[in-house]
Image 1 (cartoon, helix red, strand yellow):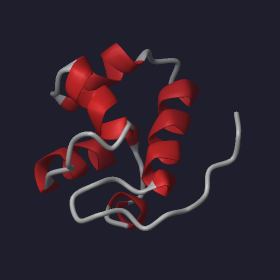
Image 2 (cartoon, one colour; image 1 turned 120 degrees about the horizontal axis):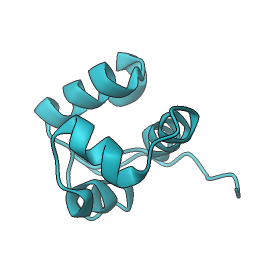
Image 3 (cartoon, helix red, strand yellow; image 1 turned 90 degrees about the vertical axis):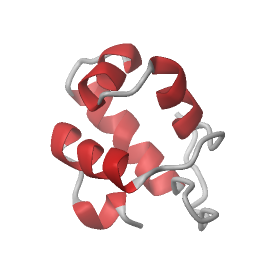
Image 4 (cartoon, one colour; image 1 turned 120 degrees about the vertical axis):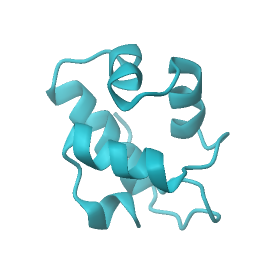
Length: 78
């Protein structure tokens, strides 16, 4: 996997740090993106759109990502 540049996201969009953390946790837990999306309570399409910066991250989804995937709050809120 190519390293990504850490960019500051636009308001509501996820940073590449969070995207990388999500993908790492999904892989480490042996989940498919569809399964992760279901665990978070969002559609697979919405999950993919979040990861690609096409959707904004709400507080509720951010909190659920923190709880379900075990990503530190500092990373989720960055």
